[in-house]
Length: 255
Image 1 (cartoon, rainbow, N blue to C red):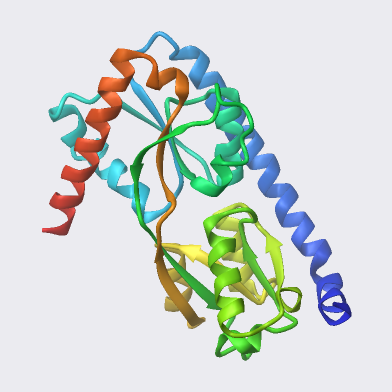
Image 2 (spheres, rainbow, N blue to C red; image 1 turned 135 degrees about the horizontal axis):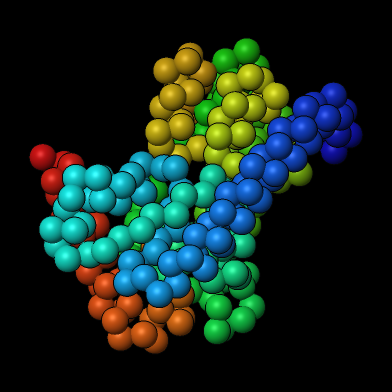
């Protein structure tokens, strides 16, 4: 795909710089989270790794409103910017519960580490193109770059859209931009042609005048509990309470 390669080369230094910066920041976050894990290993709090997306904001609401504590759940939220960072958190045992993607979970080879689905959460996604790229539909994405997370439900959806539009998979470059803030900034700044983003990131791009090409609500993501927490009766009880708190918070937010 020579045309894509030519298009990729002028942007690669900018992309690499942003990704390295993101990796450095996320490495620091992971280190801090690991330190936090060590300092709270004797705590009764249920530690949950989350992403900065609307579906996880429901738990933030539950904590900040006092709903979680009122329902008897001692909850500690550990924020990450990317699914890849949560992959690393799983491998290092930072939390008891993780907001993850089932396709990424399936790539974890060790049964003793691979988390188990606790609560499936449909995630709203949009494919948004930079307003200056003159990309108004899926067909116009040919020879362009789409930022997403590889080996995920996001890439699965992108593949489905490409197949439906009868476009060769090699005609659209899947640029792995893991950090949601970096992906947003690259799409907004035109360093990438289009991006798949959850909420509220996608709507923020649309508010800036960028173009919505498609949207969907995807299954296959949600909260997964670690095997060690699943085997602990106290933590398992708290995890089940997490389900109740999440569903109650959703009800209250929808009123």
